[in-house]
Image (cartoon, rainbow, N blue to C red; front, side, top):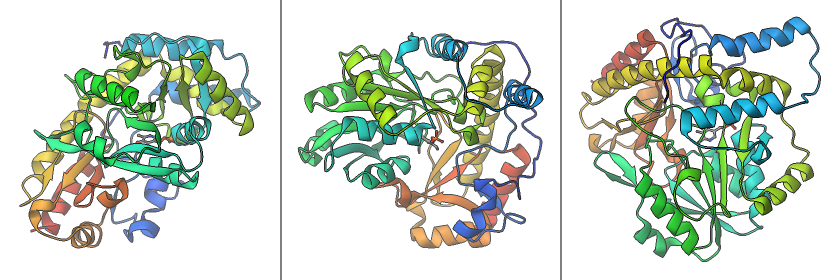
Length: 395
Ligand SMILES: Cc1ncc(COP(=O)(O)O)c(C=O)c1O
C-alpha cells in the first residue's frame, strides 16, 4: 500500500468494551461460557482499537448538525471509493459500477438472490467464513464444499480434485480474498487458475475482498478484477471499509460490478429487497477512504504484524499446536491436530481454563475441524496475556 502522512492510533490503549452492546464482549458468556470480566474475547472479527480520528470526526460532524436524514448526492462518497481503489489497489472503478449494501453478508445474500436459482449449488473453498454457507442454505441453495489444501504453511486450491466434487448444479463460486480463515493472500497465478475454473464450469464469481487492506508488510493483494482473464461478464466484486477501519457496526459495504447486464440484474434485486445504505456508514466511508485513513492502516498493519509474530511464537511453543503464518487479516488460525487431543477437549481448555472465547474451526466447514481461530486485533498487553493463558491451559 502507498505511504501517506497523518495521525496514527494508540493501539496499546486498553479500552473496556463490556456493557457497550459489543457482540464480541457482551455475547461471549452466552456463546462460550467465558466471563467478559475475567476472560478475553478473541472471536468476532472486530478489533479492540479505536478507528482513525477521521471516522470519529465524520460522526461528530453529523451529531453537531443534529439531523439524521436520508443520504443523498453521493458523488463525493463514490469519488472516495474510486480514489481508494486506485491509490491502494491500482484498480480503476467507475461510479456507476458501485452499489452500497448493508455490509457484505447482505451483499452476499443479494448476489445469491440475484444470480442463482433455488436448488442451485454454490462452490465454497473451505474452511471459509461461515456466513457464506449460512446465507446460501437459508436461501434454499446448496453448498458444494471444495476443501483447500495446506502447502508450505499456506492454503492452496486443488482444482483437479474439485472437478470430481462438482455435482453439475453449480452456478456460482464465492472467493474469499484474502482468505478468512488462514489469512492467505492469493497469488496472481492462483487467481488465474480460479478464473479458468469458473469459465470452464460457467460459474459466476463473487469475490469477497473485505480483508483486502489488512495485508501484512511485504505482501501484495491482487483484486480479482485485475486478473488478466476474460471474466468481467461473470465477476461481482465486494469490498468494504468496515474491517479495515474497525467500523463494522455501521454495516456498510460495496458491491462493484463492471458488466452492464449483471449490474441490471443486481439493481433489480436491490429494488426488490428495498435495500439502501445507512447514512452513518456512508459518511464514515467517505472520511476513511482518504490519505488519513491510508496512513492509519499502514500503522495498524505494522502493529498487527508484530502481534502475529508474538502470538505465533507463543502458540508454536505449545506441543503439537501450529499457527498458520498470516499474510493478511488479524485472525490467527491455529492447527491443534498434532496435539492428538479432540477438538472438544481443545475448546474446553481454551474456554474453561484459559478463559478465552475463540472461534471453533468446525464452523468454517470441511478442513476446519482441528483448528481454532483467534482474533489478535487487540492491544499488545492483552495479546501477551492471551499467550500466557494458553501456555498455562496446555501445560
Ligand atoms: C470474508 C468476510 N466477509 C464478510 C464479513 C462480514 O461483513 P459485514 O459485516 O459487512 O456483513 C466478514 C466478517 O468477518 C468476513 O470475514
